[in-house]
Amino acid sequence: MPHDTDTTIADLVNDLQPVRPLSLRKGMCVALAMIALGVVLAITLGTMRHDLTTGAPSGAFMVSNGLFLILALACAAAVLLMGTPRVGNAQSGWGRGWGWALAMAGLLPLAALILAFANGHAAWEASEPVHGLDCLAASVGLGLMTGGVLVLWLRRGAPTSPEQAGLLTGIAAGASGVFAFSFACSIDAIVHVGLWHGLAVMLSALAGRLIVPPLVRW
Amino acid sequence: MKTDDATLARLMAMAQQGDKRAYATLLEEARSWLKSYLRRRVAPDHLDDLVQETLVSLHRKLASYDPSRPFHPWLAAIARYRWVDHLRKLSRGDEPAVEADVAVDSDESAITARLSLERLFSQLPDAQARAIELVKVEGYSIAEASHASGQCESLVKVNIHRGLKKLAAMIEKD
Image (cartoon, rainbow over all chains, first blue to last red; front, top):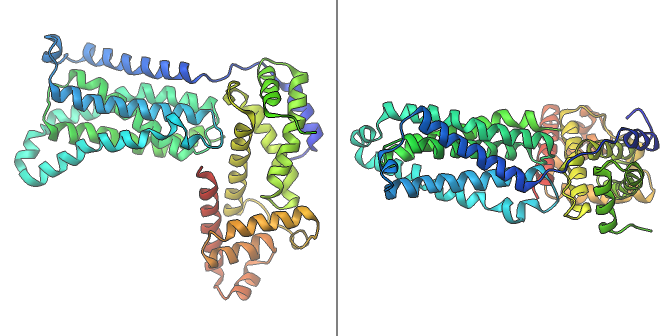
């Protein structure tokens, strides 16, 4: 540093401007709003699932989509917490839930893999690969909104572990996108959900891990 | 006299609203806390720079402090991030090695720094700790460290790089 510490302190005091502290509650509200907007976009641009229009959603839809929603919220909460750092954050409330949520949602691709090994070609057909690619692309795309607001939050905040923040941002974005697009995806087969919806989360996680850290380093 | 955490949290909340007098007091307190926190972690000739860098980070990241929470854990997180960044720069070779006379300085801070470094080194494989100690603390050249440690020159470089990276990762984990 070119100055002594006294001069640096004087410069910083002169430069002080009022700031609005980051509010975790507001951050969570914005993340939820992005997920809701994703749902609206999915059913506006696509076609809403028939069982939802009749008011009787299938059990498979509720369970699998519920897992993705919990994963999205747990990871988004962990990312928001990372923006307001303090020693001990990783062990506190919101900061520790995402691992369990990831483990629960991970059961879907795991089940899909087991079925694929057991049933081979039939399982691949059941995954409906053509529709699966649509799910993959749309989910990743819809997740960008949640991912975007989380990156903006992290840039304003002070994440002390940018790599983990990037990974969790990617998972939160992917799971949000999957949750949103599932309202327009009529396939309940576990092979489809585990493979294509799970793949969307994995791809987003990878992208987050690679792209986000340089954007949020400080 | 040390200022208690609740007072610092209040000063920080006032600083977030633009109160310059409160901010000046807070920065003075932060400086003194940072000096004692970082003194045990870096060589004495890097201390002032790192304290200033951390104060600048505090300034840039004012919004990331939640006024309803204690101040010191937040400041410690900011300081630790800057320290890890400092270690990473060392591992990339962006920072010059510590001068030999600093490492053998007999004043209290140097001894404390040394003890702290040894505690950290105990968590590294012996070869990595030895390479870092010789080059980054004792000020040996790569060739001298190679001769002293019995490792070839390229292995010394690799061990320094891997060791510092591992140190940074260990510290970064909460």
